[in-house]
Length: 197
Image (cartoon, rainbow, N blue to C red):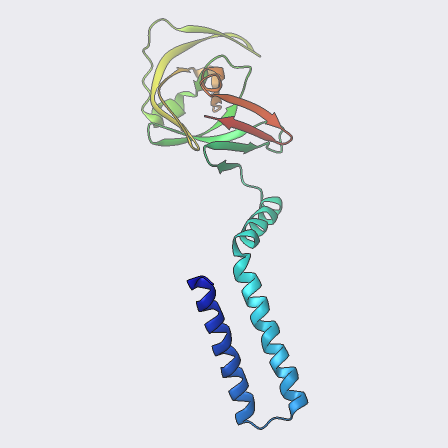
């Protein structure tokens, strides 16, 4: 018998003695005392079961809560899972140079793109050489090259990430292929985008 088992056995005996002495001191009839003793044993058994499976119960509760109120992103170790939004796209909060902005994850975009407002709030200064010509749904546009000192998506961090900035992006920021191709893998599973650093 291990020390842990010995301590558990001692606690069980102590509890039985306490319950038994309480029943004996009150001079309760034997049938009623047996029912009360069984009730206490059941209470201890339920308590012990809850304690033994506390981590499983917590995980189950978390999963149920995710179905009721799904989070946008879930970190599973280093893996990042992003849930599809109601508009059918994958959106994620990205921290750029200590400023947080909302980004659309777009595998059709060659490079990560910032709106002018997001660039200003994040301290990203255009000026990385000649402008880049990008083909968008609204036709070709000219975008200024720049660099984000740090770009953090959940558990994933990239330093000195090339980005582009243009008025034509309006208020939309896009996480493009230059970020996705820096990952070891990425893909879609059902309603989740899975990013592996």
